[in-house]
Image (cartoon, rainbow, N blue to C red; front, side):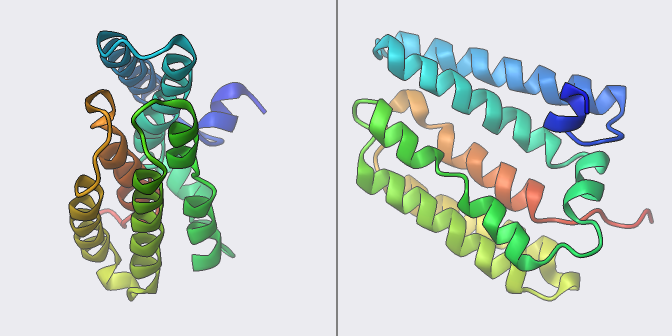
Length: 175
């Protein structure tokens, strides 16, 4: 399995790979620039770089046709999808590594993403897309109610886009 097949999905097109990796690198670079401007310590900047690469790239990857085929193939259930959301413990990694990113903020962001994922996967398939947008919009309210360092204001919105709007939504049939 190639790196592209592992990080995106088997069968990913060149365009999907360019968009995914381009966004991952651009988001990572912008996030590192914000962290450096905020004078965060080097270990925190390194953690932010890795998480930003994953989230920005993942937001695009999860929207690709190749990833939709991978994650929504026959046999995949709501349990698989909620499990995918549950393993995204980056809020707690940030609380551990970044001064000013509190454990309370981490818990609120994580719980918001998980609760929204449960709501989306419980919705009937014809309503799953609008339910995902509703859940994302409402989760954004909760996640902005907790203070995070200004250099990480991007974190919760990008996490929610990656998981709720990207990963949880199956591919729609062409009109």
